[in-house]
Amino acid sequence: MLKRYWAGVRFACYEGEGGDGAGDAGGAGAAAHGGAAGGGNDGGGAAKTFTQDELNKVLAEDRRKHQTKLQEVETKLKAALDSNTLTEKDRKALQENLETVQGQLRSKEEQLAVEKKQLQEQYAVQLKEAHEKAAFFETLYRDSTVERALTDAAVKNEAFSPSQLVTQLRPLTKLVPEMDPKTAKPTGKFRPMVEMQTVNQTTGELETKAYTPEDAVKKMKDDPTNWGNMFRSGVVSGIGSSSATGGLTSGNGQIDLRKMTPQLFLELQKKNPELLGLRPVPAGRR
Image (cartoon, rainbow, N blue to C red; front, side):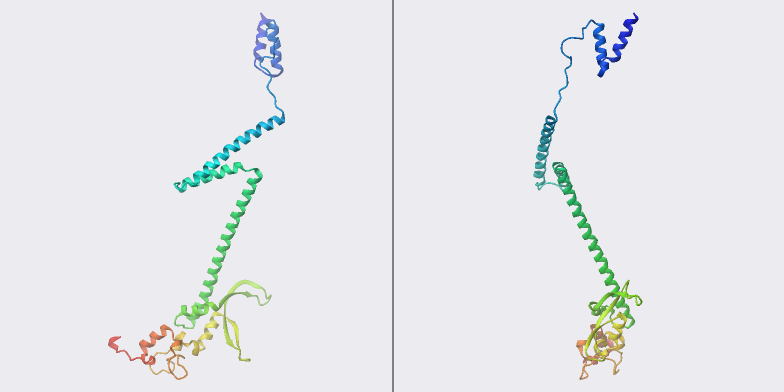
């Protein structure tokens, strides 16, 4: 009775197990049942084994089939993208799917080359945008600095129209780096300088010299023959004033309209029309 109980427990413990335990269970079962489990073939049969070449061939065939299916999907996606009825959203989704499929069709080397090219293109675009942005702000800084300096100089010297004077001097003005007088090296700062022609007092020849905006405007103000019409001190209201024309008279004493600004013409027309050869307008009709 004890022997049957023990044999039953031992058989249950190893039933269905692999390895040596299964062999022991089989042997024990065969011994207990009079060899009923023995004889004949090996029961379930041995699993089929493959050589490395056979395995490589199976994998290559599977990969070929997968590539063929991807190529078919690629062709269909390209055909779908040629449709003119797609919405922008649908076209974007199809394009993303196509890029995914094409990425799977590439080899590792080809995919790395594509990704490298994309990164290079992105870098080139970002670099171009950075250069354009820097150039825009540099131009903005230069223009605002120059115009501010010229406007301040025009206002200080009582120009009729500061904006007109800025327009006159802007093409002649540049931002130049400031130099340290001790080291003769750039300080990192810039200042506007106006390049104007002047007569060399020694040689009597014209030469180009650089002036600060204030000095350049003052030089113009001190030359009433050429620039007197641009400054308020060049025109004094009142009939018969010796400076009423502010240097606008030609060699024969006549007003030279070529040197006159529209603002000055309107002022003389209103206050001193006779200087322009016009009849005074009666007070009641002004």
